[in-house]
Amino acid sequence: ETGVTQSPTHLIKTRGQQVTLRCSSQSGHNTVSWYQQALGQGPQFIFQYYREEENGRGNFPPRFSGLQFPNYSSELNVNALELDDSALYLCASSWGQGIDTQYFGPGTRLTVL
Amino acid sequence: GIQVEQSPPDLILQEGANSTLRCNFSDSVNNLQWFHQNPWGQLINLFYIPSGTKQNGRLSATTVATERYSLLYISSSQTTDSGVYFCAATNDYKLSFGAGTTVTVRA
Image 1 (cartoon, chains in turn yellow, orange):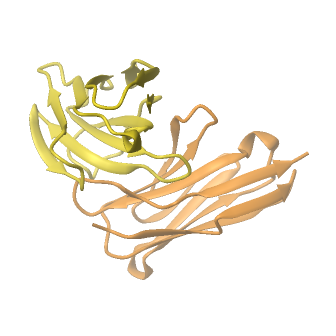
Image 2: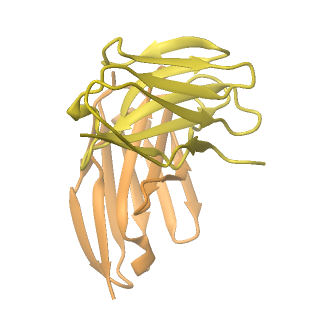
């Protein structure tokens, strides 16, 4: 059984650029959630995808968008990058929505200059 | 969403000591998890414990759902226990995290 994987591990972008982060869910899971963790803080929920549909969204602007594919892997896209977008981005996969154990990937560390 | 508060914010222990971390949450939950974040940022699952008591080696956890708190116990601490411990809870689909407890275990 493979765990949750994310790519890339590190990324450096310039303010105003666009970025795509990728997540492969754990085998057998159909739900992917994305979180943003700023330095020194707990993760903040961005959104969740369940069976290829956005299932819920946190307090993030529309320039944060996502996709889930038929194999339940997922992408997080961020447009018009701002300096405050610098953070660790974590994805979590689970079976079902929310109430089941969420398993986290290793994260992508994004730096915006 | 649910508000999650963790205490203490920082904990310094001598190797071999026992400790208790607390997590208070603002509403009823259907999912509560404890995590240990390693130095590289990965969140390691410790417990899925919306209610009751569980044990895994030197770690154990108890959630009293009716009183809206959970406790994580670390016994006979080791230097490898150092790191940030997070509690996260939800009653819908989005996990709300506390600010974490930073544990430092000294040899």
